[in-house]
Length: 285
Image 1 (cartoon, rainbow, N blue to C red):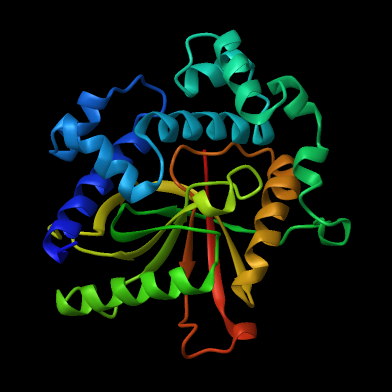
Image 2: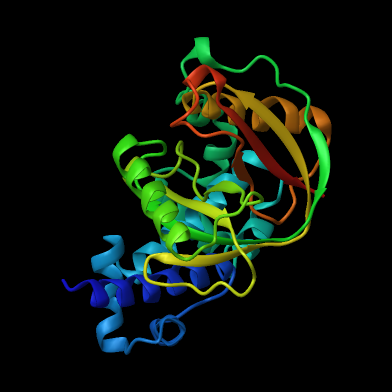
């Protein structure tokens, strides 16, 4: 495939994926998403499948159900309210779709702590969580490159960050104030490893344009609980578990509507793994 064509496809799919992420609570259709992507309906579903490995319908349905699973894990919301937040008209409709996808009813999923806990060896279960600082963060404009792979998988992550850095350098976007962020859209204990979505990001000016595989994403002004991790990125999952299983229930805080994100404070090419510093920003109300 010629580079120009590949870039055009990536721009279209980036627009479509970002649109779907923002509208999981609403019914969407092929004509809607194709219009956002500026591609004819006839071609769009083939392009989307070629870039993501899933049909539009399967992708949209899976994301809604995985979002429902996350809410069952991390909140006490009633099933009817979760249905409303994931685009299902009734709790019954959600329950039926959920059981078909996960193999068990939402009530069983919520009550069966072993679903989540069984994914974590007992020796790795968090007993405590470090205390965060609470910050009011300004809005951020980001440029990203999307990775769909097992979280932290070396080859695709190194390749993506290198591509992003090279593109930003060519476009004169790198400054002393540039921040390097990561957005993880999925829970690896729910989503299959090879379908986990991660955006490798840098902060950019508002006037920066999306191009090819490099999309744009906006983080709104929000309040965050910020946890600092020192050490290899392999230890981040344990900290996330501690945050959601220990700190969040004990703090009495409610999750905010913004995206959680990671901020990388030093360069893994220049710092040994034990000295890496990463902030995890959890949105709160």
